[in-house]
Each structure stands twice: as C-alpha cells, then as structure tokens.
Image 1 (cartoon, rainbow, N blue to C red):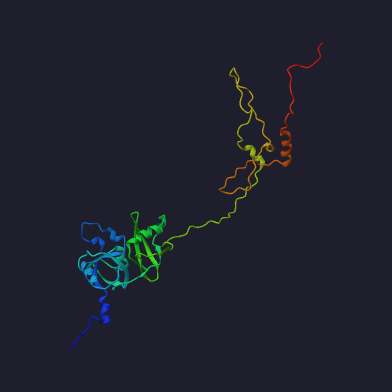
Image 2 (cartoon, helix red, strand yellow):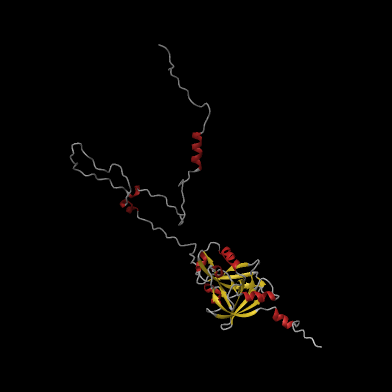
Length: 310
C-alpha cells in the first residue's frame, strides 16, 4: 500500500501560494460601461477579471494584494495594486502612464505575479517639467495623490492630476528597496530639481555705484530755477506798451544754492534727513538760558503815571 503526499511537498506549497498568469492589457478608456472610470488614471492600481479573485482567494497570500507586472518583450517591469475585479476574462485594464512605462500597446501581453513588498521609509521624485514649481505646496499635493497608489518602483514615471493638469514625476530613489509598498506607511519625501530647470542668475550684492561728476556752477544759470521776483512785464492803465522791455538782472553763479547731497545714498533706499547740520552744543546751552523760565521775574505796568502834583 503506497501513499503519495504530493501537496505536502515544500516546492508544491511554494507554487501554490504564488499567483502568476498572463493577460492582454488595455487602457482604462477601453473599459466598457456607462460609468466614467477616470479615477483609475489618477492612481497606481489595475482592474483584473473575477477569475483572478477566485484564484487569489484559494491561495495563502498576504494582504494587501500587490502585483508585479512584466513585459517580457521589452524586459520592463513595475509594481501595482488592484482596484476591482470587474474586467472581462483574460483582460486587465491599466492606467495609461503604467502602459507607457512598460512600453505596452493596446492588446499587448503582460505577466502578472503576486509579490510581497517592504514598507517604504523614503522616496525621492524628480518632476519632468518646471511647471511643477508653480504648485504652492507640492508635498501636500503629492501626499494626496499617492493615496491612490499602492506601491512605488524606482525608475517609474508616475502621473498625478492637480487642478485639471497632469504632472509627471520620475521615482529616482526608494528605500529600503527598489520596489516598496506605500500603504499605511510613514515615508519621507524629497524632490530633485525638475527636468530642464535653470537656476536664475544671481547678481552680485556689491555693485560699483556710478560716481557723480562735479558739475560746473556756471551751468546752473541756464537751469529753470522757478519763480523770480520782479521779472514780469508791466501794464499801463491807458493800454500803451512800455518802450523798454524788462531785463532781469542775471544771477551770479555763486548766489545759486544747491541742495546738500547724500553721500551715503544707496539704490532702493530712501533716507529722510531732518536736520542737515546739527547745531553745536553751545548754541543749545545759550538758547536754554534765554528761554529758561524764572518765576516772578516780570515787570509790572501801571495805568497811572507817577509824578508830583503841580
């Protein structure tokens, strides 16, 4: 009497706990149905057929369900989660950015395998366009977008949707492994300089200020100096014109007073000078002595004039 314990063999248990099959993949826009499934494009999860759920439920796999997608023709691979099991048999639906990473076309074959990934602790992203810098708080936007993802793979270019605009980010680095799970994790996020970004040129702080040339005082006479007294024309009551035109006395250049220049002037800075020249301390002391109040020091006045009677 012989008994064969085939299912107790450790090698058979290893194959039994592993899900591996091939599907023809299509983008989400090919998914039939009245409902709009644009939410699939905003994340990193796929839609698989119901037979996959039946097969996975018979296996002793760990949750959450994570899968490795491989395109054997181009030797490209990535990792993803599953959103629903409503696809037609033999077909799975992928986000468009995931098909681009795998270099897959509509109807191409993709190998789907169940995997166990380590929880992420660190990730670094590089925006593929400088437009990503226009976002006020990029970390908060990325954190909100990664809620629709299950895992990250180093080298992938993920797409996030924000304000009706799609931003692409390349996963530059992940820790502790090249493929990590980001479900219920505490992950530090860092950003690299965007692709094509150029730092603005910084001007030196200390620039050579242009020196003013000393002007000739004789040239001030030709300047418009504003109002000058007694320089207008006179008019007579009988309407006759005066025979002599007024000839204003020319000013001596030494009489023209210029403002006090501010030698400490700097571009972009306004200085209000209250007192151009402070008074010496002696002048203050003399003025205080004159204006010092002394009680009962005034002189009285009388309406009557004091004098002797005749």
